[in-house]
Image 1 (tube, chains in turn green, brown):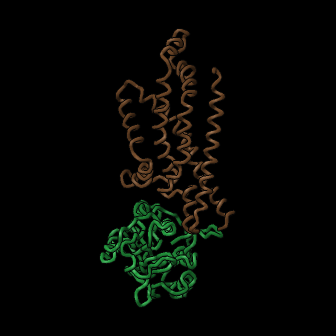
Image 2 (cartoon, helix red, strand yellow; image 1 turned 135 degrees about the horizontal axis):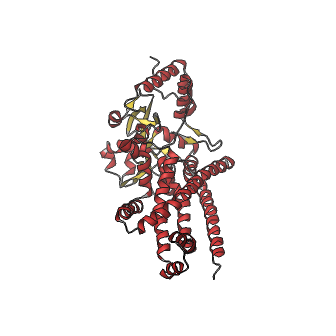
Image 3 (cartoon, chains in turn green, brown; image 1 turned 60 degrees about the vertical axis):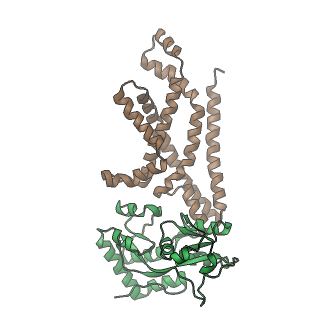
Length: 226
Length: 213
C-alpha cells in the first residue's frame, strides 16, 4: 500500500503513516525497504527486514509461516472496472478476462469463488497492481480483482476513471473479507509484542483513527485499546 | 507529477546503476582474464573446475544467480551479503565468464608465428604474453567487448529483483503511482544516453588502436 507521492517524490500510504507513528511511540526510527513481494519470506527470515507491513492479509498458510500480529484493519477483495464499461455486477464479467496480482490474497479469493471464476474467460496473473491498471486502460483485461484499500487509492487519484462492481442492492460486491496483519519472524515475539502495544496505545489516544480518516475518510481500523 | 523530483530521483537511480556497472567492470575484467587462462590450461585440475564455472555462469539466468547470492547463501552457508554488494558480486561473477570466453577467443586467434618470432627474438614466455600477445588481443576483442558493455548497462536493471533501487525500479514506482507511462520514456532516454557514451568510447578506442591499418 505504499505509493510515490507524485508531487513530493516521497513514499506515502496508510501503512507507512501507521508504521511511522508506531515507531514514534517506541522511540525508534522507521526504515522502509521496498522488496520484491515474491521474496518476502526470504527477506524476513534472512533478517534483511524485521517485519512485513504492506497490506498483508491474514491467511491460514501465512499463519503457519509467519508470526502474525493482531489484525489492525478490515479489507475486502473487490472488482474494479473502467467506468465507461458496461459491467455493473459480477455476472456481467461472464466470458471476460480478469487480472489479479500473482500470489496475492485477491487471487486466493478468486480461487475460493469457483462459481464466479468458472464464468470468466481467463484470469491473468500480473506482477503488480500498477501494471494491472495500465492493462485495464489498454483493454488487455476487462477487470481487476484487487484489495479494496489499494483500489481506493486509484479511485481517489483518478476520479471518474474506475468503478467498483456492485451487488444488486447497490453495495460493493466482495469476493472475500479479510484482516490485515503485520508479519514477523516466527522467533520474534519481542518486536511483535512492542508493535502491538504501540498500536493499542494509538487506538486509545485516537491517532490510528486520525490516520485512517486521512486516507479512507472513515475509520477502517480494528485495533481495540485493551 | 513533479518532474523536477522525478528527474532527481531517476538520477539517483542512475548512480546506483552506474555503481553496479563500474564495479562489475573493475572486478570481472581481471577475473575474466584469469578464468580464460585457466580455461586454456592443459592441466585438468585447473581446466575442469573453470569449465564448470563458465557453464554455470552462462547456463543459468543472471536473475537466478542474483536471487541465489542474496537469498540462498544464508540458509546454505550462513552468509548474508548486503543488498548492493550481493548484486555487485553476482554481476562480477557472471560477466567474468563471458569476458573469459571473449579473451580466449582473442588469445587463441593470435597466429602461432607470433610466438615463434618472439622466441627467436629472445622474449621470455611472460614477456611474449604481456608485450606481444595481449596488446594484439585487446585490439581484436574490442567489438565483442562493446556488445558486453552495452548489455551490462541494460542488465543492471535486473538488480531490482533483490530490492536494489536502481533506475528502472524508481521509474516503475512512479509509473505505478501516477498511472502514467511518461517516466518509462524518460528512462529509455537515460539508458540510450549511457549506451551512446559507451558506444562512442568504443568507436574512439577502435580508431586509436587501428594504427597499423
